[in-house]
Amino acid sequence: MSAANTRRAGRAGASAGTVWERQAEGYHRFFSQFTIPLARPLLDAARVTAGGTVLDAAAGPGYAARAARARGSRVLALDLSAAMLACARHADPLLPLVRADAAALPAAGGAFTAVIAGFYLPHMTDPVAGTAELARALAPGGWLAVSIWDVPATARHTGLLADAVAEVTSARPAPPAVAPGGLRELLHAAGLGHAECSTLRWVHPVTSAQALWDGLLASPVAAAITVRRATPATQRRIHERFLTLAAALTDRHGTVRLPVSAVIAAGQRPTASGPQRPRGYRHTAASARRPLPGTP
Ligand SMILES: C[S@@+](CC[C@H](N)C(=O)[O-])C[C@H]1O[C@@H](n2cnc3c(N)ncnc32)[C@H](O)[C@@H]1O
Image (cartoon, rainbow, N blue to C red; front, side, top):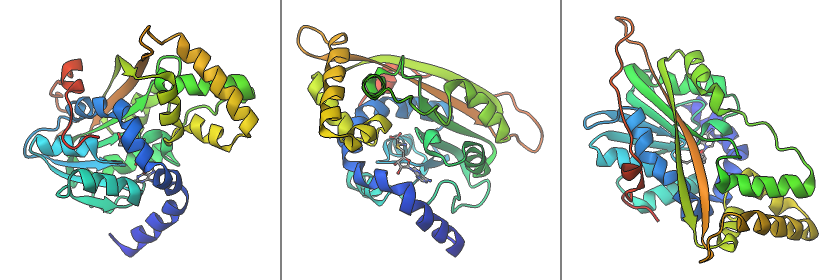
């Protein structure tokens, strides 16, 4: 990494890194159950196959990076958080890691045949510039694939808590930095072609409403940050409201059956010889649910 990039990573680490440092363990132990099923579909969207070179930008504990390695690609997992990278190293000591700012990649332009960024876009300071920086790392013909959660009404694993917070505090949640409907445009603005988008929905079981509450509060989720900062009385009211909302999704065994919905978008860096016909891909719910190596 250049000195300039090290300085930039240091600056960003002082701000963006903080919540990811403190809540990395909670993310890895609890929240990852929602993101892991998206690792393989993300690789499919980026056309990751054996022999490719893959950058997992904002890799967190490295779920998608490990899945790419299992496909026979050469992989670099990059993240700003030392605690997230420690989780990744623990799961696979051989996974190449780098601590750096994905908004100023320590990589030459065109270095990777695929770049993936799972659930990173909403945390970018500048999504247009940040996406263009990810696209810069792509070799001509390479694919960038990104994922984000769907709107809270369909992504109930975080939507339940967001609704409980909004109803108790009457605070309007901040509009998302990147909305599902804006993904294609973002990829086009980054100079990518053949932009495509797909929505994956499934029902995810969590053992109890209290387990969901405890897990979310230990995770780097925006609504959980609001709860942790609230007074004890407000926290109690949000908790009560949360349990009432969760009851509507709870079966007779106490398991919360959460509708989860995520959007994956991908775009291709044009080749010098002009637009190419994209190679299609298909992801399946079954392949998405198989356990990944080194998952908690
Ligand atoms: C929601 S997690 C996603 C982790 C992983 N991609 C996944 O799908 O499970 C977001 C990750 O972005 C990382 N992050 C946030 N800002 C970053 C930046 N500017 N550069 C690199 N990583 C960043 C955080 O440390 C965190 O690991």
